[in-house]
Image 1 (cartoon, rainbow, N blue to C red):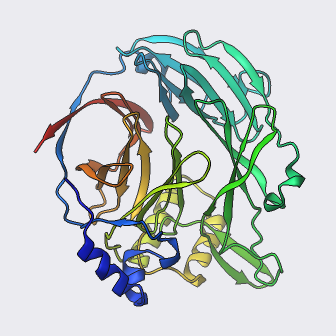
Image 2 (cartoon, rainbow, N blue to C red):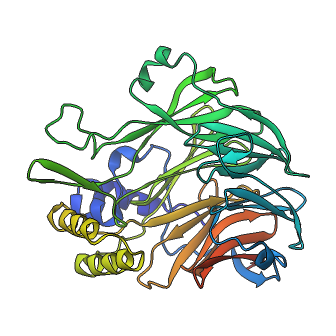
Length: 406
C-alpha cells in the first residue's frame, strides 16, 4: 500500500526555507495544510493496470464528427459526445451503435453558439453553454430537451466577495445544487490600479437553478497565468503552454478536487468547501528549453495558418516577457465513478506522459504511460474513453480497464 512517508515529510519541512527546492518541486508553503500527506515519489502502486482496446464505436465514421468537444456516459453504458463543428450532441449505445442526436448552431432551445460542457447526473444529461450562460437538460433516452433555464445570479451584490467577478462556469451535482464559478476580468496594464494579470482568482459559490445563492463564497482558486510585456504604449498579453494553470473537477459524489499544474499537490473538498484530504507527491519539474518551445509554437501557428503579424506579436511577447525556468508538473485530472483520481504528469518524452491513479486520500493504485496524442476524456465503470487525432479528424477510442493486484 502507498503509505505517506514521515521521513520525507520532515525533509519537506526542512526544505520549505529553501527557495530553489520550492521552485524545483513547484510547491508553495502556504498551499500546504497541516494535514497534508506527503508520499514517497518511488511508491509502488497497489495494482498493475492493463487496457484492452475494444471495437468502438461502430457508427462513428458514419456520423463524421471532426472535433469531439466532450464526452459523457450514463450508467447503462450509453455514450454522449459533442460534435463541436455542428454544435450537436450524439448518442451511441454501449456497443457503439448510433441512437440519437440533438442540437445545432443557434440561440434557441437545444441550440448552441459555442461548444457546451456536458455531464450526466442521475441519468439526465446537462449541457451548460458559457457564452449564453444557459443550461439545457436532455433526456438520456431520446435526447429530447426536457428543460432550459438561465441561472442568472440573483442577489450577487449581497455577496461582497463576488464584487467585480462574473459567472463563467456551472458544475452539476446529484442534489440539484449548482456549483457556480466566478472569474474576475483581466487588467493587464501594470500601471492600472486594478492590474491583476499575475494574480487572477476564481471564486465558487452554490446556487439553485433559479440563480438564488445557497451559500457565500466556499472556495477560491488561483487563476491562469499570462505573459505580459509593455511594447511602446501598448500592453501585450499572451497565454503560453509552460505557465501554471488551475485544475478543477468535481466527482459524482460531490467532492471538489483542486490543484495547480505547478506541482503534484492536490486538495479534496466536500461540497460545502470544507477540506477533506490534501496530498503531495514530490515530483521534480523539468527544465524548459525556451528556444525549442518558441520554434515549436511558431511552427504550430504556421500550420494553423495564423496571420503572420499575429505570430510576430506572440514572438515579441515571448522574447521580452519574464518566463519560468521549469515546466508545470501536472497536465490534466480526471475523476472516475469509483472515487479514483487519474492524474497526468509531464515526462521528458514528447510522445507520452505518465498517469497516476490515486484514491481521494492519495494512495497510489496504479501508474502507467500513455501516448500524448490520445487524450483521456472519461473513465466510467470499467471503461476508459479517449480521443485521438487522425488525419485532421478525431477518433473516439474505448478501452476496458483491468486492475491486477501485485
